[in-house]
Image (cartoon, rainbow, N blue to C red; front, side, top):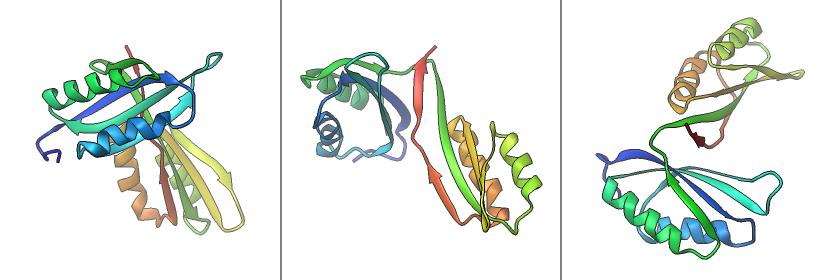
Length: 159
């Protein structure tokens, strides 16, 4: 089991875009008792490959072991444990329409976001920023009585 003193790590895996690849990658983590904090998968444009970004916690030895074992999976072409990276995460939050729309818009704008949908009974704000800033936005948004919060996974790219 990962210890609480372990550091946050982000790993990117480039794989063949085929069925069961994601299951094999996640089984590797589960089989060793490591939690995946965040997981995003998307096809790489104009290729038959996909990019998997995994956020987890572990020490350098654990990450080295995971990286080596990821390389052994047949559909895996590249594994990168990010050192210097640009990373973003997205969150959508639904608020009651009775809340102050301009305050919500101003708060979202402060975190690289804005209002993305307004309905008869709700308003939806979106923010895309660094994971720590997304966490702070969610904390600050609590004063506006959110109805629902949907947080996406981390995406990262080497600098």
